[in-house]
Image (cartoon, rainbow, N blue to C red; front, side, top):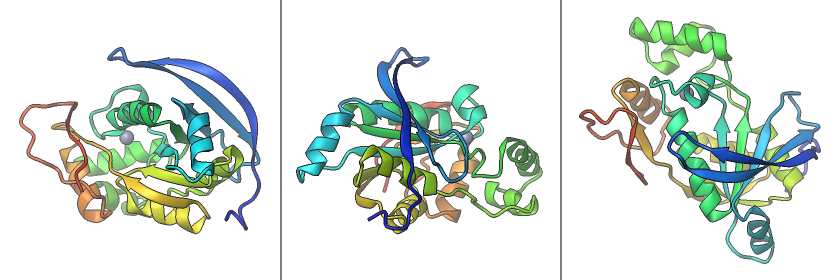
Length: 229
Ligand SMILES: [Zn+2]
């Protein structure tokens, strides 16, 4: 595996205590890297007993739980209700910490089109386009995310097998082609709010995400389901 992947190495490993708005706390081992192909400052967060999960995996046991999360400034930092990134990030940190594994924090904002373009796409969505149509109208692909750096980070961390925490089949396909052995796909929860229902419906119908969007009365920002397949 990883035959053709450009080599990356760990640059720094440092503990960072995390505390979320709802009081959940854990400590991450934050890794930075040298040699990532796009030159951006991507991070890996080792969570829970990540070291033990590597040892167990190497001995033929279950693979570490790995969540690739693409940066979303508005959702991750400001709690935007236009998407489900903030609750997805929060859920993933706790689930990966419980299982032992890694969150890969990928600096590819707005499906890879960038922050300003994402805001322009929001404006087009308010004029009636869905999230994918808006990207096309701006001259971008539907989804420009590339997981090469995710595979490079996993290689540098010594992760050969992963249990992939994701509803997105494209992530598993890309990682597989890059040499990562995905032993299992673990679905994430559905985080529905009145403002992101259209966005989630577009993800489900346009990108074959394995989630179902249930009817939501007034559960704004509340996690309403898990394990939809
Ligand atoms: Zn988002």
